[in-house]
Length: 374
Image (cartoon, rainbow, N blue to C red; front, side, top):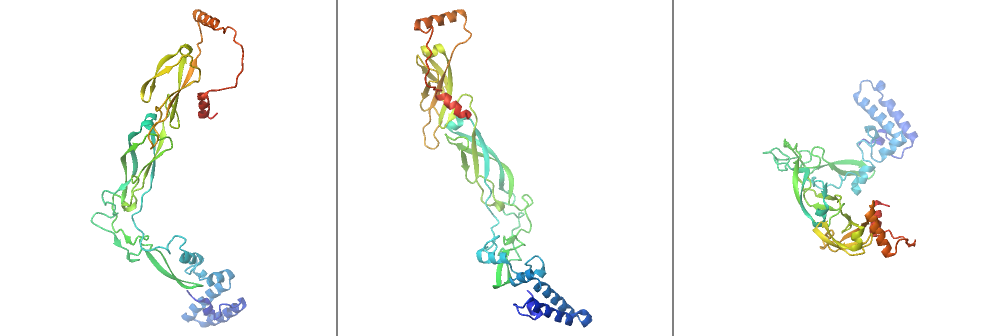
């Protein structure tokens, strides 16, 4: 970088008046109108004018004293600024100063997230599924080399395979050597003279694949199943990322899931609840007989142990809770009404007394309210 103080013949601590006086003296001495056709004096006059333009401006002079050349354009120009200093000593910015050797062309591929819709039976017992994913695979033509078959990468002639080039810049600390990625090879140290035509030099192409997955029992909406190394292949045939299958459980028409327990409502006639009976309920494990005891009350819960959802990774299963819903008959004919009146007379319930008690909405009513957000 040109020494403007030396051109004007002043010291680095010269005052603005001293700089202005030196410039006037040299400008008169080397002005083209004075020297005529002397080419050397013409160039000297330009250098003097450039030096005065920088040193007479406080901001430009400050930048020049820090190692920049404002007259070269672009702020710090071809000099050495704060960013270069910071990168040199602390390895910040793009990391060019901290680079050691060429950048590997092959890099890890990205992960993929795929939604997996499952029925309640599949989340309860587990299942074996096939999933299709659109992702990147190794190019079948170049096998990830990025080169046309029969060719190979060539060492970069600019950086000699180092992946970076060095430059020397001047700063208030003196001359400092820095390195930056080679623009010719983008820091790889090699160039691809003849890229593969199928993958355009990427070393990978898009493809649809079918993956098989064993879904464990007990998964629920939001559970993620990781398939290691089944994601997209990286550039230049780099290591593949992972596939994450995010489970979404479909709504069941009969059962409501609460953790690993299942809940359902069993509507029964008033007479069956009063007299007792045996009913058959279709569960996820097949038909199950339900022993309805005489005098079964509304909202009573019958629990079938071990007929719920499988526990994830620990074995065993939750329970199935059956909430009895007693239906009171309506639209009675004369004979049915007479029979009920006779029953009320026998039980002394023709005119029941009004007795209040604490509200008890029942277990399933509480669960229903909770699920509905009330």
